[in-house]
Image (cartoon, rainbow, N blue to C red; front, side, top):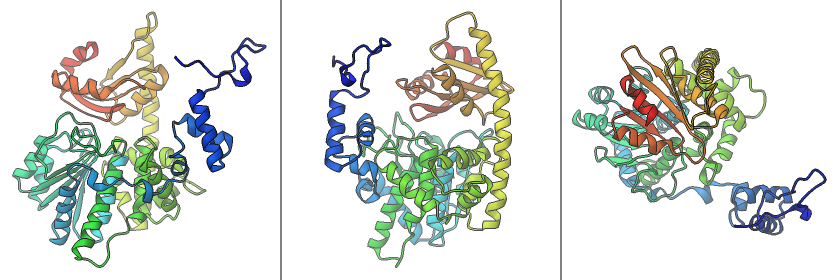
Length: 460
């Protein structure tokens, strides 16, 4: 066990406190090396060392560039198959459907793909499922409908990795499916033409920290390269001009800001400040942002407005706004999302008070549980994720919040603390038939279950 390093060798101050340096000896030496080699201020060098950034990574951490940090697309399993299928669809001018998730990452991923494909005159339909009626991810009925409407290729973004039955339904109806996802997987299904997911068990790209929009961007980089190689087109879409969407998704999906994610956000913010995207410009106007857009604006002003549509309103509003080029239409949709966000905040305050009152009444005379599961029929399914986050912050333990339906079914969301993998728990619960469905990214997840098994899940 390494002994602590004492600042100025003070082991006991006048207040009987030890002045312990937050960095150990190795960290202090790393900070000195960074400061001396690159001329960084000592304070900055210490922050980098505290974040486990070593000397070789310091410059790229402070000044991240896509040139140095963008991963090789070929390192992703199935990337070549996915890109070749997209190239074929573009060259043959096929009708394409994009099936996205209803959160910010899903909206940004869908809009990014739509903007890219429309550059070539491709007809693209964006389909976002109804959170309450359809739930998370592709479902058989919707996938069959898209195929029957003429889509020969369906691309699922931010979902689909764990939906083999729905993808099979699309295939049997005559459509190919390409999955671009980042959620954890226990098994790899073979129903899709290609399944690109850095978190699939047989992927060794080491890019599991990317959000779905980041994966879509890397895929389109490879599609552009194949199109140039084919010499089928003289020009290809300028992907750098779409980095504002990738930055917005990266920040709002709360993925680790390391590696290429840092470049996505830094370069994406530069693009966002140009207000080139009509949807982002309209959102900034609706949020009354009077300064250059920064990461706070993305995460706390723009993101919640996009999410509001998926939570309590029209799930497709976010993707529609971000893929829109008509500024008048964008202004109308942005105002609608702002109003929904106001309503969401009011609902959240009421339901959070109810949840906290319930927990306090159950645990007022006993020790707090190591995890919390709360459920109520009056809660809105679109709010449970926010409630879980708030309760996790207050009680500092893993939390599941569930909105019950009259038919005995429930839709819930979970949030975890560091060191507790809720994803593994949900996979096990699904395997034991305690949950009907679960989608996860280690520390946050959604789930569906039957009320009769709620007690078993709580005690499991």
